[in-house]
Image (cartoon, rainbow, N blue to C red; front, side, top):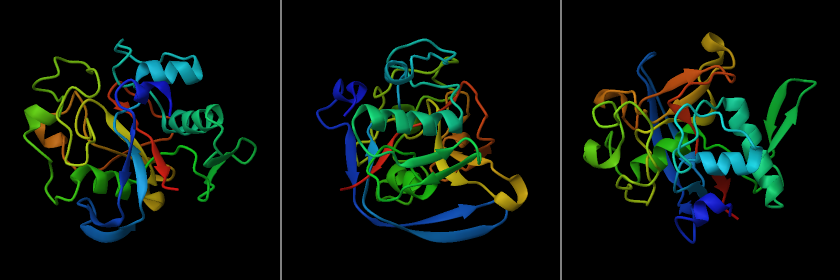
Length: 227
């Protein structure tokens, strides 16, 4: 386990039991159910000190070693997952082809990866079908309390499964393509960020961005297959 998570807990990855989740897209008035296999999700967002330790880069607009890294594109998040896997001697989850300009998954690998959006929402709601897992001012940094910036991870109350900052602070990249027919390669991000009003920080909100998109309220957390 990389040092950032060790600083907070002896076990920075939370085991998430399998189940199922209903997703919806209000834009096209569609609902669908996804089966979830057991997986692991990091208790905290990837922080600036962890990102620097692996990449030697400091892209964030708001300085703070324990603050979530932001200004990270989807492509950079995927690359970080593979680099961290290499650092820990794990098989890489992503197969990146620069020549073909493609990224595929080695689904049998137990290296680090991004969560799918179904996994993300399932973990965020933590067995509850509500749009939040607690009172917003106790669980999330958002427009009304964030004072225009990110904050150190883990300072707000976690959800029932021990996951912090699932709502607010920064949005989180997921693996999934949003709508390939309409938006091409745009990827999903979830959770709301420090700039969003209360209505933006919901477990069910879906947003999208090009894989190269970077902004100061968008970061990521890590997932892994359970062995």
